[in-house]
Length: 419
Image 1 (cartoon, one colour):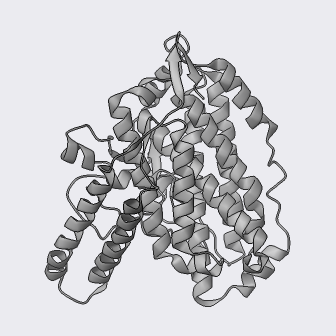
Image 2: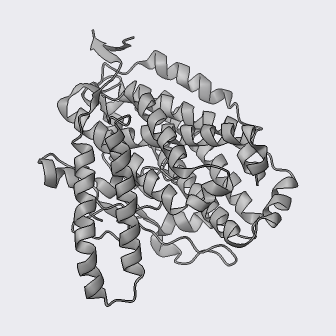
Image 3: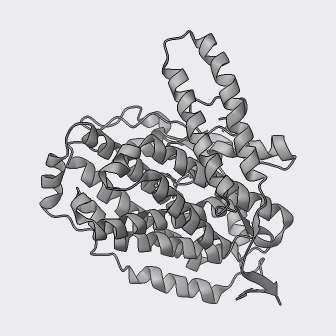
């Protein structure tokens, strides 16, 4: 899943007041980057961004010997999340909520129990052989991709595992689905961490569990962000897979051959979150749900766009144009989101693309300013107009005329799909 210390900033270099999927690969991380902004700008409550430390943090302050030091946390790195589990229990308690469609959840459970990818993530000698051929800057970029992806998948594992544990008494069916989703995420994270060993590295995931900060999100926002995280993950994986099937000369590492089945896990996860959203009409029909749906779409799309443009060399090595790849993924994810969200962004508007490109330029200028040798005070002053322009562009994107969407209506206490 994963994916959330400054206003509308989406970089550790865009520093403004206020407190705190693969978006590149992060689970939920996009949303927190933008969270406090709407309250300040539009007068509506932003998601709670209370950051808490893992309870066991004091027990281990260094990764095990021989493992890779985790990447420095920024607003664009995958994050770990927690939520109000009591509220989540109440939302899916059939005795309290008449909109819980148990038949749909039972069907979802059968899908997850089937475990279609149980024997899919099998390695071969070609993994190590291919890794040894990747050298220089390309190797560094590839290692970063594997690390970010592994951290993102592990973040999803932790959240889903805890949800599975906490919902056992309230709704055993939903609890089991979350437990099986955590199985999928753990399998993905383990496979990615094993891939890192081909590059003579590994992540101490136990250390990450205890040392990373956990960001708090209300259940409503967890559901929006997780849905987008899973669906955008699906479109990223399937797009890369189809491209490499058509252009096998760019498949530099065997992990890409696993993407076609892998992305179906992401798709199933997203479908389950869709069923969860339908359990609470307010999440899909209220006026503020339209605001939040657009907010999370913008958060996820912009964060992915900035992340990927920072790492354009990775996509170039795969024979992909990063801009065209991202625009395709954004538009397809937006179409998928429009089936359930009450409103989405108009990603087909040429102005949307222009503003994305302008954000990339501003982001690169901020990075260049930070990297300069000027005194810190001078750099802060130089960044102010860039940051202001960045925030202004984000607000302009949010305020663009949205696309009303959604295909669910509620009648007789039962959500129904409208075609």
